[in-house]
Amino acid sequence: MSEPVIYETRGRVALITLNRPEVRNAINADVATGIEASIDKLEGDDDIWVGIIRANTGDQERPVFSAGADLKAVSSGSAAAITTERGGFAGFVYRERRKPIIVAVDGLATAGGFEVVLAADLVVATTRSAFGLAEVKRNLLAMGGGLFRLPRTIGPAVAMDAILTGEPIPAQRAYDLGLISRLVQPGEATNEALRLAEQITAAAPLAVWASRRIARAAAYTDEDTLRAMTDKDLSTVTNSADTREGLQAFIEKRAPNWQGR
Image (cartoon, rainbow, N blue to C red; front, side, top):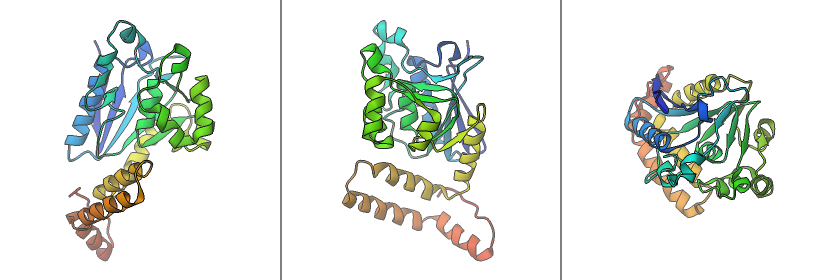
């Protein structure tokens, strides 16, 4: 039996793969615990600076990144098992973390699958992808953050349309609305996500992690709190060995050798 979530590394990048193509990568207890364990590895490894979540879509004619919660698990009374204490739904959507996560989507991300996308930091998607919260079509609620993250991301009017109809947003429309960071051809999502990750890992990791934290907090935190966060992170970053390395590299006209400390 194959692992429902596969964790591997490429240089400073972790690849986390949803691996249940036979059920459209529906999220059950094994997937939730597998994602949480993968984030634990990513966060705990000083040599890994960025993560990518992708999906194995097998030989699906119409590929699905994730159809969300495994409704068989929900209907059997096992709904609680698809959440974790630290991560919430899928072991991910409410997880506190330091390092950026890119999600690579090549196909449909719907319901909880879309909520995983919304909880990531950057989205790379192909032109055959689509994104929707289909819960209202099943008399369910999108409880993994989608009901408040989608309006913050694409605006309340368009989000309300998608939320109340349950209809998916096509990739080009999602890109135009600012949901997708990079839009590529079918089959190229992972490759483009790796290119994006390499660009991020070329920057100073302490500055990347602090900038991510402040930018994400900006959606729901007042300016005084954000200023205090920025001042604290600025002190940490500027007093680090990487800042000294960056300045020395500039003086010596060479690429810096970042260490993340």
